[in-house]
Image (tube, rainbow, N blue to C red; front, side):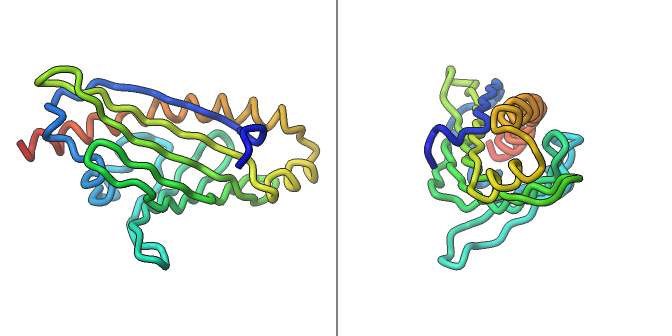
Length: 175
């Protein structure tokens, strides 16, 4: 999607008190129990895993972001122990109706020293054609939608750094 359709870009980092060699983001993400996912944030409703039609792993997440319930079908495009990139055309369900947004989710871990690494949670949301039609129909400008999504995404992403604690627990139990 063109950058002029960007609704939000949010990156939050957190230190994981585990050696990088013990961190496996892909293993964590695709083996994360639903209850543990929900403990990472009050906004997280449910998580599950499946595969796309072409066999790629998918993470299915249901959560609230701002005033929307998001149903996200993240398809893994890059799966490495320290980097995972997922794409979703996600359903956004609001009091005014339902639409779709494109999400790119990147989870990354980088070595800080022999005992710590830095976890990064990056989300880029973009408007789909359906989203642009939806906001026009309900009388919201793109600038208003962008401002609301940026604020909601930043707040949500800051809370999701609890993922880092979950990754840390799994990493330390492996080591």
